[in-house]
Length: 129
Image (cartoon, rainbow, N blue to C red; front, side, top):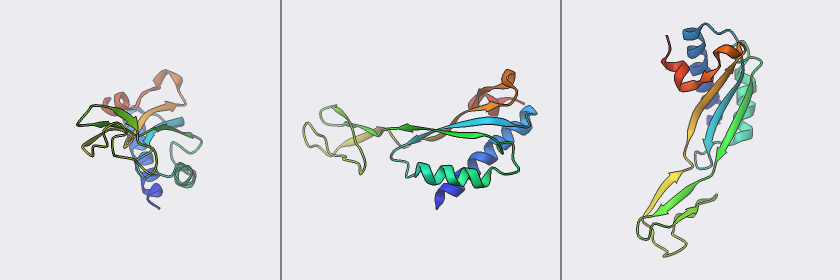
């Protein structure tokens, strides 16, 4: 179950941001997860619940924002939702020259710290200090 390693990596990164900013507790962490990222949301939620004990995320909620997969045809430029399992042939011209536009994301979007004055986007928190 690679969701456990993902949960541990998220916790490690949030703990590092907390150490840099002096935070001691987070209320939530929001992730953006693409449908093509190979992550099972329920398994990730379970792994997060188990792994967050004795961390700054011990009482935090995991919020997962699902991102649908989309592709564009290299031949005719039509865009479409690829779905799961992914349909990577163009629905317009049946071409196979496909560019995935989104759906593979796996990123921390933001952390809501217990001190609301310090809540910022994750990218900003990782650059402070």
